[in-house]
Image 1: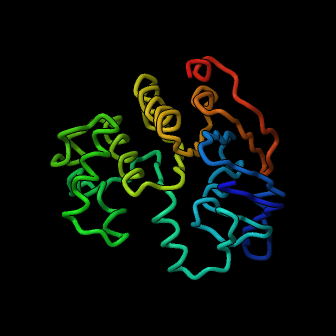
Image 2: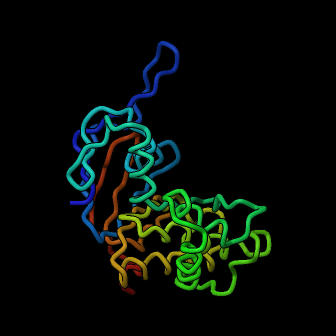
Length: 234
């Protein structure tokens, strides 16, 4: 089991008031799964993935990653775990505008202690995997939104993470480009066994996964296999 959450609850304090944002979450994710998490705004999706991605450790209950809890680990240890184990892809790409594509994609490798010289061929290979060969010297503004998201996926892949968290990765894209981006995620999962945790509010996008988690008011309301047109194409 790669990820296991047991009776996880999370609260935010606002003055004298406590707001519960996660309610008794029990969730297990195997290696190689493609999991979709779907719910409306404010349902608790972001709180859940922040916890899974080692960004937030202020919670009650237990989170085991590869059978180990890191809730009481130091900030430095958590940063290392994040860098080595998790790839993040966001809705707004989060690319550095003045940096080249090479410089954007190599960041996780440099943070992990790799030299620029050693990182370059790994970056070039990752860009080829997402359909952007020969683009390393461009800057983000020279690329379309779909191409920028491909760069973000390459950045998430370069350090061979144990899993990828894709947070509304198609939210800023048109329908055709969204389908192309989701095809990349599906191919990574199907052909390379990459574990993917996809967060979306779009029912069509959720169909690309194998398993659908529905969340509402901080609680999991459904955990079911995906059946749909996009899934059938697998």
